[in-house]
Length: 118
Image (tube, rainbow, N blue to C red):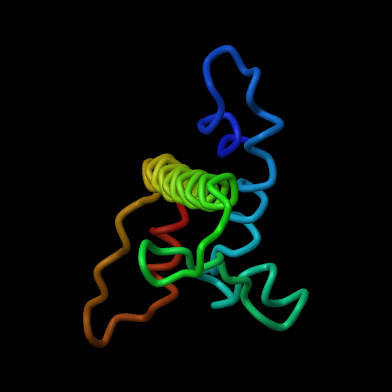
Protein backbone atom coordinates (compact mmCIF):
# COMPACT_ATOMS: atom_id res chain seq x y z
CA UNK A 1 0.00 0.00 0.00
CA UNK A 2 2.91 2.38 0.73
CA UNK A 3 4.19 1.89 -2.79
CA UNK A 4 0.89 2.84 -4.36
CA UNK A 5 0.53 5.78 -1.96
CA UNK A 6 3.94 7.13 -3.00
CA UNK A 7 3.04 6.86 -6.70
CA UNK A 8 -0.31 8.63 -6.81
CA UNK A 9 -0.85 12.36 -7.03
CA UNK A 10 -1.85 14.37 -3.94
CA UNK A 11 -5.48 14.56 -5.06
CA UNK A 12 -5.50 10.72 -5.36
CA UNK A 13 -7.47 10.78 -8.60
CA UNK A 14 -4.94 8.82 -10.65
CA UNK A 15 -4.55 5.76 -8.43
CA UNK A 16 -6.45 3.45 -10.80
CA UNK A 17 -3.94 4.21 -13.55
CA UNK A 18 -1.01 3.35 -11.27
CA UNK A 19 -2.23 -0.03 -9.96
CA UNK A 20 -1.14 -2.15 -12.97
CA UNK A 21 2.42 -0.80 -12.96
CA UNK A 22 2.73 -1.07 -9.18
CA UNK A 23 1.52 -4.66 -9.39
CA UNK A 24 4.01 -5.34 -12.20
CA UNK A 25 6.84 -3.78 -10.19
CA UNK A 26 6.07 -5.81 -7.07
CA UNK A 27 5.61 -9.07 -8.98
CA UNK A 28 8.82 -8.59 -10.97
CA UNK A 29 11.00 -7.50 -8.01
CA UNK A 30 13.47 -10.18 -7.03
CA UNK A 31 13.31 -11.10 -3.34
CA UNK A 32 16.56 -10.93 -1.42
CA UNK A 33 15.46 -13.97 0.58
CA UNK A 34 14.49 -16.32 -2.24
CA UNK A 35 16.37 -14.87 -5.22
CA UNK A 36 13.15 -15.06 -7.24
CA UNK A 37 10.40 -12.64 -8.19
CA UNK A 38 6.78 -13.64 -7.43
CA UNK A 39 6.01 -13.60 -11.18
CA UNK A 40 8.92 -15.95 -11.88
CA UNK A 41 7.82 -18.38 -9.17
CA UNK A 42 4.25 -18.38 -10.46
CA UNK A 43 4.84 -18.54 -14.22
CA UNK A 44 8.39 -19.87 -14.53
CA UNK A 45 9.83 -16.85 -16.38
CA UNK A 46 10.38 -13.14 -15.93
CA UNK A 47 8.22 -10.72 -17.96
CA UNK A 48 9.93 -8.24 -20.27
CA UNK A 49 8.83 -4.74 -21.26
CA UNK A 50 8.54 -4.10 -24.99
CA UNK A 51 11.74 -2.77 -26.53
CA UNK A 52 10.80 0.42 -28.35
CA UNK A 53 13.75 2.67 -29.03
CA UNK A 54 14.10 5.39 -31.59
CA UNK A 55 15.41 4.03 -34.86
CA UNK A 56 15.51 0.37 -33.81
CA UNK A 57 11.79 -0.42 -33.67
CA UNK A 58 9.40 -0.57 -36.60
CA UNK A 59 7.00 2.35 -37.04
CA UNK A 60 4.43 2.16 -34.30
CA UNK A 61 1.50 4.32 -33.45
CA UNK A 62 2.41 7.30 -31.23
CA UNK A 63 -0.12 6.15 -28.65
CA UNK A 64 1.69 2.82 -28.23
CA UNK A 65 5.06 4.51 -27.90
CA UNK A 66 3.60 6.93 -25.36
CA UNK A 67 2.08 4.07 -23.39
CA UNK A 68 5.36 2.15 -23.31
CA UNK A 69 7.33 5.21 -22.20
CA UNK A 70 4.75 6.01 -19.51
CA UNK A 71 4.74 2.38 -18.38
CA UNK A 72 8.54 2.42 -18.08
CA UNK A 73 8.44 5.69 -16.14
CA UNK A 74 5.76 4.28 -13.83
CA UNK A 75 7.75 1.08 -13.38
CA UNK A 76 10.89 3.03 -12.48
CA UNK A 77 8.93 5.11 -9.96
CA UNK A 78 7.38 1.97 -8.46
CA UNK A 79 10.77 0.27 -8.11
CA UNK A 80 12.17 3.42 -6.48
CA UNK A 81 9.24 3.37 -4.05
CA UNK A 82 9.93 -0.30 -3.22
CA UNK A 83 13.57 0.49 -2.50
CA UNK A 84 12.63 3.51 -0.39
CA UNK A 85 10.13 1.43 1.58
CA UNK A 86 12.76 -1.27 2.24
CA UNK A 87 15.26 1.33 3.44
CA UNK A 88 12.70 2.87 5.81
CA UNK A 89 11.72 -0.54 7.18
CA UNK A 90 15.38 -1.51 7.65
CA UNK A 91 16.06 1.78 9.47
CA UNK A 92 13.20 1.18 11.91
CA UNK A 93 14.19 -2.47 12.46
CA UNK A 94 17.83 -1.55 13.09
CA UNK A 95 16.87 0.98 15.77
CA UNK A 96 15.68 -1.91 17.96
CA UNK A 97 18.72 -4.13 17.43
CA UNK A 98 21.45 -4.52 20.04
CA UNK A 99 25.13 -4.69 19.18
CA UNK A 100 26.25 -8.32 18.92
CA UNK A 101 28.32 -9.59 21.85
CA UNK A 102 32.07 -9.91 21.50
CA UNK A 103 33.21 -13.46 22.07
CA UNK A 104 36.44 -14.29 23.90
CA UNK A 105 38.35 -17.46 23.07
CA UNK A 106 37.87 -20.17 25.67
CA UNK A 107 34.74 -18.73 27.32
CA UNK A 108 31.50 -20.71 27.21
CA UNK A 109 29.00 -19.35 24.70
CA UNK A 110 26.12 -19.96 27.13
CA UNK A 111 27.52 -17.20 29.41
CA UNK A 112 27.34 -14.72 26.51
CA UNK A 113 23.92 -15.91 25.51
CA UNK A 114 22.50 -15.22 28.96
CA UNK A 115 23.99 -11.72 29.16
CA UNK A 116 22.94 -10.85 25.59
CA UNK A 117 19.33 -11.93 26.06
CA UNK A 118 18.97 -10.16 29.40
